[in-house]
Length: 178
Image (cartoon, rainbow, N blue to C red):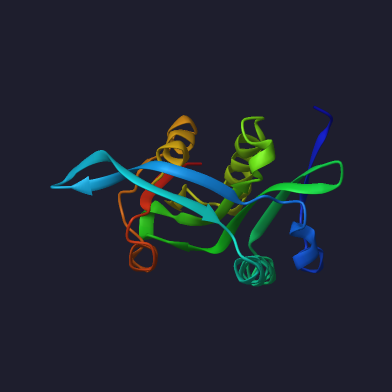
């Protein structure tokens, strides 16, 4: 594989056409679910595929993140976007000083090549420089997604961000020390 480059994006560098070579597809078979206070793996098969409207919404969110002082970092292979991460600018959680890792995605054709790890580490570094203590991640409960976060040192969050719990009740609420 050739050289993968990383770049912090400005607001005007985020637009719909940027995602033309990005493949957001995931076939999920098993997910983590909390039942009776314990985490268990359950069958929950579905395919996660983004529509044009999903990409339009994503562009809007990423632009808002940057406009508000947040962080968007992207991975490129042969000038094509193949991964991105975003962190919101505002702290929450009192003494925990959480920063919200609002998205991290790697194109299906480039998974398993270390892009997600590099993007995650860039988010941690940005959060450290901002003075945060932890990244907060409301993450997809798919077994594969959770394995990535565990490998990155994430654990169940001490404080849940209610906005995320209400928006995505099946997501896992995680934290990772900066």
